[in-house]
Image (cartoon, rainbow, N blue to C red; front, side, top):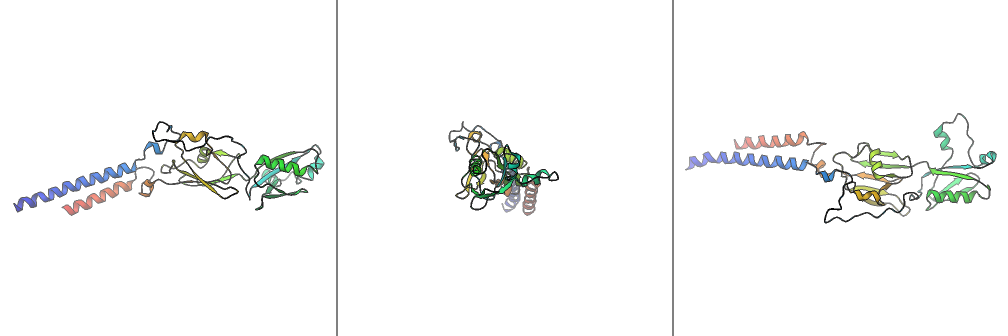
Length: 271
């Protein structure tokens, strides 16, 4: 009886070890596979029984950005009288390049939300959009000019993106607002293990920063108030938990090497 028992015990141990290794490998493989619903942009999720649209309807696209301290405003005054315009615009020379030339017409907004404009003095732009700032500047110029045309735009419109994107950093915008998908594209798209369902956006405002989350896999974002990114926004793409498990951009060699090491260890012990 004792001999039979000692003979069958190693066989049972080996069978148990094989089952254990198989189960561990399957677990690793399942954990390493990311469901399609986590990676596909713009899905129609309205068919889900538990789905509730988290976004509010977008009522307007332009004139939503409120000017902030440290913004740089490009301001140029044009009148019918060229000599009169020179009083309000820095003199240009033929040797000045485009960027330097633009810098001559750029005015920073200070902490008190004021700009210091030639001959006019300080103009407060607190709570203003670009259109409202243009109206305030036109009003401030009335004592000096009977007719004038103003060009005003942001000269420092950038946003910052960090986390699981191919090109993180501070990115220049070519317009006053870009869509969240344009912002992601400018950063080289999200890496495979970036969390598309919970993109964190931090937006400065006159009352402090506000934070909200965006689900890029939900197509309802297209018509929502969260669809656009504005100057000075900070975007953070968080990693999935799978990356913390040591999984690379695909099922990594580390998974199989770990499983193989565990198998050899168990086999050595059972033998």
